[in-house]
Image (cartoon, rainbow, N blue to C red; front, side, top):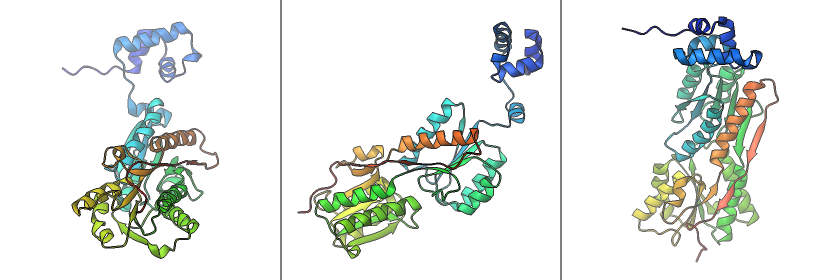
Length: 337
C-alpha cells in the first residue's frame, strides 16, 4: 500500500497555524514569527516526516539551487581538483553541482548549455575553451543567465572571470631552463592552444628574449593535450638537438616520461623536463616533476564565490581575479653538462 505523501497542509493542520505561516518558516523566514510558533511548526514537520516538493519550491522561489559546470576533460586531474574547490564553496551554500564533461567538443558544449538552461540551473561555470564567445553571449548573456569563465576561456570584458598568471608561469619555466644552461628547448603544447596556454608560450618567449635566445632554437610541437599526446612526441624530440622540454601541462610531461624511458633516455641526465599545473601525481613520478604550480583548488573556490556574488548582484560590473603561480622545483631538471 502506497503511503500518502505529507503536504504542507498537513504540517499546518498539525501545528494549528496557516499554510502561509508554515511556508514562511520552512523557507527561512523564521524571524517573522515567535519562537513558540517556529518550534510548533518544526516539531510538526519532523513528526510527520515532511519533505518540501522540489519543483513546487522552484516555482515559488525561481531557484533550483543548482550550478552547471562545463569542463573539457574530466580525466585530467587538474579538473578533478578544480571541481573539489568549486564544490566545497557551493556545498556550503546548499547548491548542487551538475558536472558536464564536454571532451573539448564545441557542439557538445553548446548542447549542454542549452539543456542546463532548459533545466533552469541558477548559474554556469565555464572551464573550457571549445565553446565560442558568440554561443555564450547568445545562450547566456542575452538571457541574463549568471555565468563565469575561468582558466582556459578568456573573459573578453563581457563576464566575470578567474584565471591564473599564465604569462608569468611561462616566463618562470623559461627562466628556470635557461638559467640551467639549456638553449635548445622543445615546447610541447596542445593543437589550437586555448588563450591560457598561448599566454604561457608568450611568457616563455619573453624569458628567451631576456636571455637573448633566438626563437629558432625552440622546437614547437603541437599534440593532443594528454599523456598520450606527450608520449607521441618523444621520437621527434629524441631526433632533434633538444636538451630540455617545457610541457605545457603535467599530463603531457607524464606521457614524455614514459616515452623517454622506452627510448632508454634518462631524466634529467639526458633531458630536463618542466611541467605545468602541479597536480598530485607530480610528486609520485620518478624523478619528481619540476613544474609551475597553479593554485587549482583555490581557482575553483574563487570561481564559485564570484558566481554566487553574480547571482546575488546581477547588475554589478564584471570582475576578473588573477591568481599567482610559482615554480615548484624538484628533480626533473638539471644544469646542462
